[in-house]
Image (cartoon, rainbow, N blue to C red; front, top):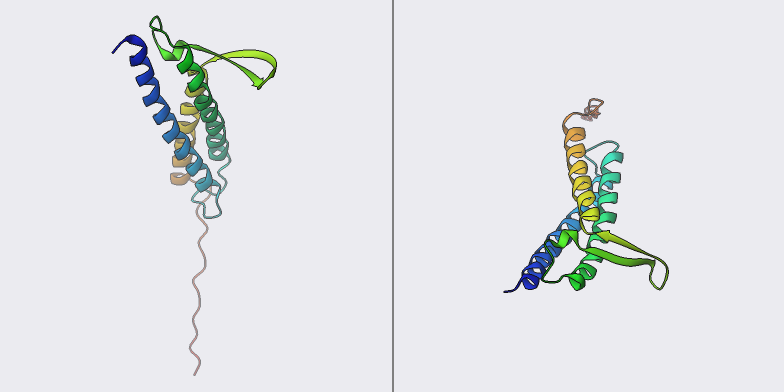
Length: 139
């Protein structure tokens, strides 16, 4: 197996990992934003997971571009510049390395998990308890 094939195999594993992380992040976002919340106001969690999702989409979008630019001289697919146009056919061309989007994806996902754990275990207000239901027997 030559160097290009090794990099492409590594990139394929990275793609799988990024895809699993994106699916997990979207599920976590839906869960913390739902009505059946464990955390009373999960704004930090929602924003962390939402931004992680955006960076995850960018990560997956760059993978085919990076794959097409890998050569035997490539030392790491993380360092391959991926040129793209923001508006498909027109506008200026930009270039990003995959680590510029995968790193924020991972950090924001971890921030959402940590914020959720902190807010779920150390609430700012004691949990609201329902008063006991009074049951009267009719005679």
